[in-house]
Amino acid sequence: MPVGIPFTKDNQPDGRGRPKGLRNSKTILTELLQIVEKVTGADGIVQEVDQLEMMWAKQVAQAKRGDSYSLERILNRVLVGRPPLQ
Image (cartoon, rainbow, N blue to C red; front, side, top):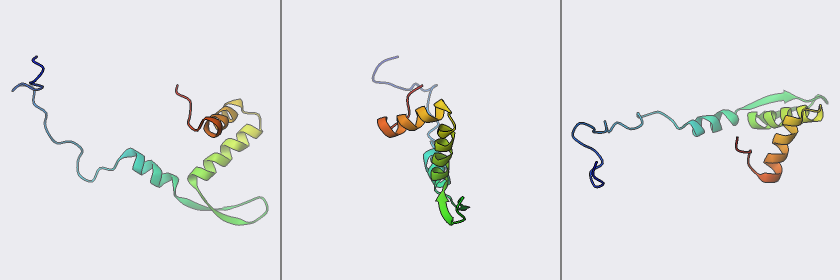
């Protein structure tokens, strides 16, 4: 196929792209992680906590119980600033 002609008459793009109203996956995930719930702590105090903070609390609790995978994920996120590539 010649370099200057990306499409032939038989091979044309449909031109539709993303359907209207379909949101980006990152936007949806961000909105879900920002949902706030009321949580009662061990001391009886009720506080509002978002989903992301609850996930971090669970990771820390698992690391305290000796889960080395959770500890590794926390340290990678805090010290390196991003999760390791797998």
